[in-house]
View 1: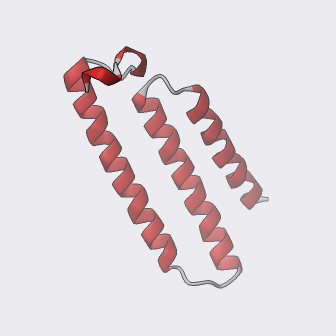
View 2: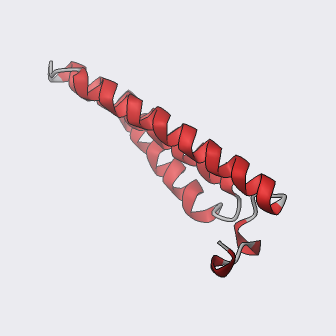
Length: 94
């Protein structure tokens, strides 16, 4: 039952990522929500099958790096454009 709830959490995070794509901060929060839920799913699955847990450490490391890079991009966007609204940013300006 817990595994099903975490998988539903990943789906809800994916849905939020698809429908709240106008603001960078909301997108970053939804991605982190999916990463945390996927980490929970992996914890349950790896402990259930008695598998090696080193992959979870690598996954968590990549999740932290993704969050740090996203936050850096968000800060640079806020400094350059004054907000995190994607629809105002033109590709030609970059």
